Amino acid sequence: MTGFLKLFLTKTRCVLGISLAAFLVGVFLAKLRPYPLSRAIIPKIYLHELLWNNTKVWLILLFGGFLFSIPTTIVLVIN
Image (cartoon, rainbow, N blue to C red):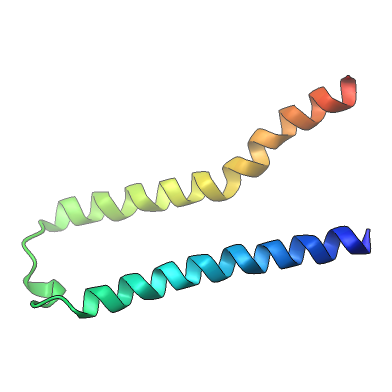
């Protein structure tokens, strides 16, 4: 059990590190824009929908792996 926990934490740390690096690269590239975000021509309604859609995708990716693995685990136990 200890080996599994150590492997899980190592893999989780790796995935979180990659996610953090991708976020920081995005922030860095956003700072290199020639104009500030406040001058971008994006309607506020569209921006709200875009952020809400991205949040839903993130939640599906976060919880989907756990929820979709439940039926697989049940089938494996039955077999």
